[in-house]
Image (cartoon, rainbow, N blue to C red; front, side, top):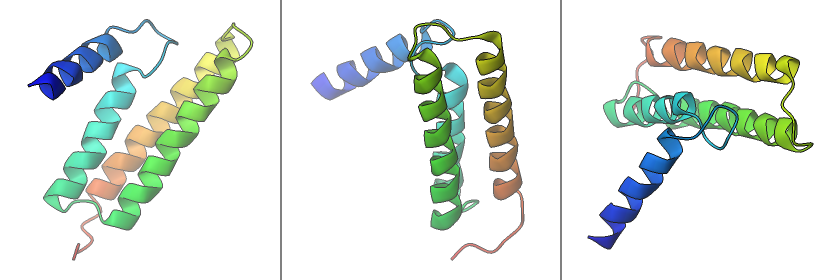
Length: 101
């Protein structure tokens, strides 16, 4: 019961984060899409690992952009581009009709 409350609290706080703070809604949705792809067999473990690595790279870039206290418009545009690319990669990997074992 305590775990459920903590998960609900963490999810609520994460989803209400302001742009540029912490994990964004888009990142949460992409993580969910990756997990769903693995659960349904649309993604192999290797594909999921590669997509997770891309998500880690985005998180790193966000940390670096915030390191000086200011996220510039160019940094924000780069991160948004990376997130769009990651979303497209998730779509391609989930729909590439490869046979999963």
